[in-house]
Length: 49
Image (cartoon, rainbow, N blue to C red):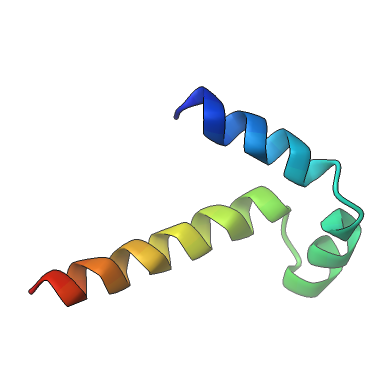
């Protein structure tokens, strides 16, 4: 994991939306962030084919 991503995550975690995301998704924003990243990558792979 790149330092830039970690830095971005730290900013993201101190976000006022942290609690909202916790409630909404029922898991920490970082897990949600990884999940969204994964889905985005799947879409990119599909487009390449």
